[in-house]
Amino acid sequence: MMKAMRSIRGHGRPAVGRVGQQLATALAALCAMGWLGGGSCHVSYCSEDCDPCFEHCACNTICSHSHATFQATHALTDYFLVEHPVSNGMVQRTFTEIAGLSIERAGGPAWPGDEHVLAFTRGLLAVNPSHLARRDAPVEFVLDSLFRYETAIVAQFHQDVPPGRENLVTFLLDPRGNLIEIDQALAR
Image (tube, rainbow, N blue to C red; front, side, top):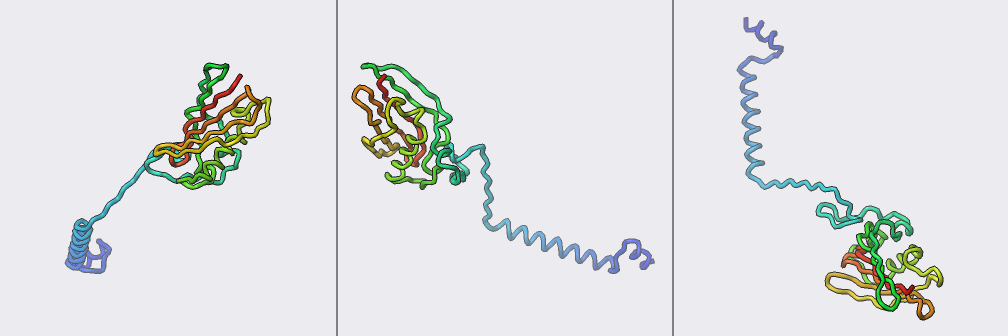
């Protein structure tokens, strides 16, 4: 009868041997759980709908668009423009809510030096003459100043034009080189 039970169960070991093996496996599993449970194990997962090339992200801080073209990394395409007249026939234009333009995305370092800021802002002027340059003068800009503050970088240029046709362009970047705003004082 014992042989008949073994053939029904399909195992070649007596039932006592199987119970011993199951008991040993259970003890090993409990010991492993106790060993892992007593140690320190930390698992974290971060997920967000954020592109570090366009905004500051908590999970991912590395922009992976570094192979984009010069035109694509300097073109002013997504922005909000506010334009209003000021005294002496000047018009004040402010490009704000600018998306996707940064020194890092253009191939520069995450914490840019002055030379990177100047190269990036000159690239913006060269790629966006329809937005930033006077149409009745050559697209030649001269650097007026570059200032670094604790929370911002400010670069100011003027277009080389005859008197009375002024065009002053000021770039505001955060310390990491993300373009925040462009202000333009333009004579009519």
